[in-house]
Image 1 (tube, rainbow, N blue to C red):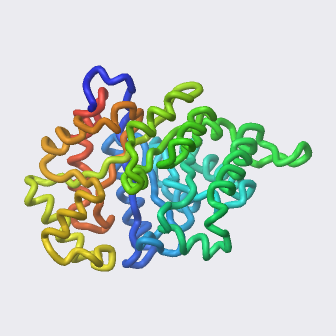
Image 2: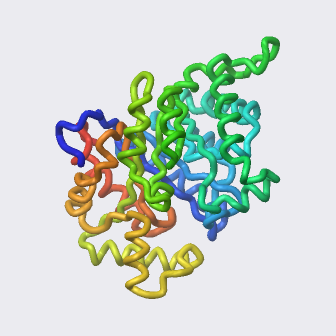
Image 3: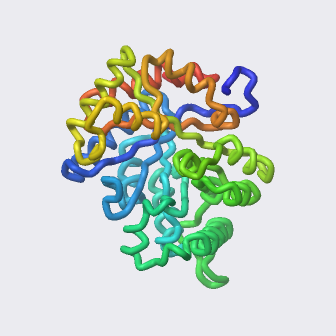
Length: 331
């Protein structure tokens, strides 16, 4: 539970954005950049962009670095995070080059989130598309994680081949997304940040607090824990449900199994979506043990970026929810 005496010092709130396919991609990208500039004006500290390949789960962002570079040209101070790059599908040298160029374009604002790809078969199309056996998932991740760290720590591919531009401090901005206890422990030992994957943990019967404890127990240096919370604030609980109903009408392909009110309620529960007034959501978040050690809270608004009331929800998060969890007010 979050209390005034929680040991973690929270940074300014972050926004986690999932871009959905459906509308033309250029329109979705433009709308998302507009949301990013608005979030910066509202005082958010970071923007994290979800990325998935081959339109898995109706995702619209398979290549995150060009998009982050574009967002960097429309913002000035907000940090920009990859949420996340699946390492089994990446060559570490090619990834390092993309990352250092993007970091240079953003003025050192890149936060490099990496992971294994979604578990429980949700990344099956990506493994097939890239010709990678999913049985090699753990080994590929460990190998490429180690290679990426070396490249960003030393800035060299070999003694004779240097990475360009130089990586600067980017090595200290790696975050690992996982629902695996052992991976969390290794992330801590390496000095990386942790992005707990709550849905994977829930599917496996795990607990976010246990995952974070494993990370903290082995952590070298200052811990970085970025916990994602999904919130749908409205004037009332009924109004928040109306937001969801509108989203279903706008993105029917995203909700193929929500024909009834009961199914909607189950969807909210299964996806750990907090709904209601800002006051109700704050009370729910204060009881969430998974946030106790968070140094960064990533707020996810589970609506299409083109939803007519997305900006309203963003404003509620920045003015009515985040200030009650963070020691510093947002503008």
